Length: 303
Image (cartoon, rainbow, N blue to C red; front, top):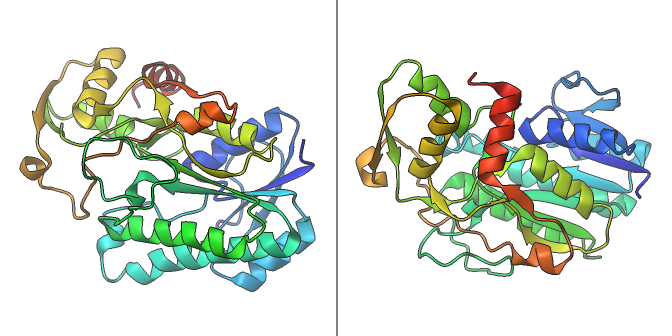
């Protein structure tokens, strides 16, 4: 068991759940984020940190000396990333920030875990992508910067002591997500149009946090895909299950991406990720996404 794990983006949707998971296991956490204070209830050391500042990152790593670093910090506003005015900021966080974390991890000999995305792929076809697939061609700027982050991890951590974990369709209690958006819209609309030609699987952040903690108890380094189990679905399928479990009566109409036509960034049609490598490595897969949704609604209601 590592003595100390450093978490970037600790105030975010995944970071908060990860701090909770690790502290509940009795693992010492060092939480960090751009904000001045930690937003979670757990008692842990907190370091305000701008990951785009390499000197600050290296100083934080050298002073805390973590055995492992889980890099959750990222620009995740996909549509906003397409704006020319935002692109330098997106690059600074997702590329330069990740380079800085990777360089510092190499400097202090810490294992690095990098959270990536299905958006590094081109989203074509119907075959699930396996972790070793390198036919990337991201469709949007967010995906391009996350791919460049992956390349930075491989470049700077030449020891190979890293995990790259690609996820998709993330939802959790501590941020905006599809479940919260659907339930909010249902309060003011009796009919909703939802895309049915983009296919993938949701990822519930408490389940992902458990897996990341499990991974960081091992030396089974490499690239992994991790979403909840339960088969591949469309956003339309997900929306219908959300309303069914929440007991909300709303008419959901399936539409194509072209018919929907509201997104600034192009989205992948195929977000299917092959997760068999998790089982081969001896990790416990994430539970069925329907079970994850039940737990989310039980904890958060329809807010």
